[in-house]
Image (tube, rainbow, N blue to C red; front, side, top):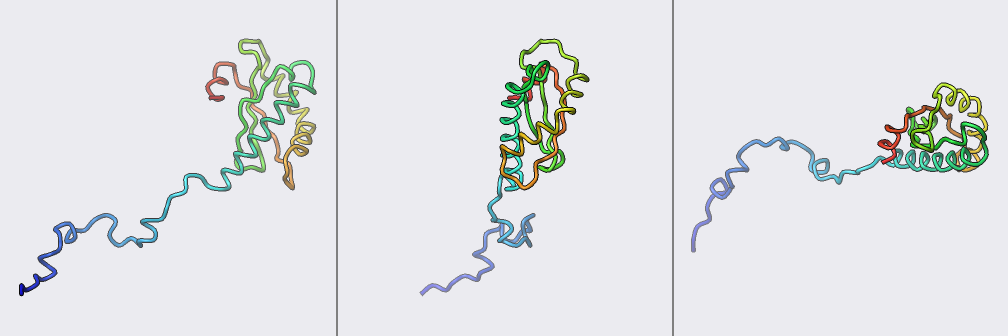
Length: 143
């Protein structure tokens, strides 16, 4: 019968060296990484619902300049309790006064917020802030 070699000789050379992951808890090292935070996913769902609702409300219930607007994006600012609504002209290249549009949107913010509150299922409706975006940058954001 052959005699077994000592464990020192059987070990591969890599086991003798120190590596960056040495000393890390294996449960941390091999934990599956989540791509999205569930709170962020819910905030994105809310933003999508608000964008759809505002597009419908702006296209049908408001007259003058607000009817010619479309919602490009809605983003949490800084969280889902307050949302930044990015609006642009529905027809690219149409002349629009950004200050006048923001003033009208701010004046109608209460009504828009109540429409959003009816469309979503939340205890509190988020506050809405508006920002006007020129036609060229609006198409880049929409992609």
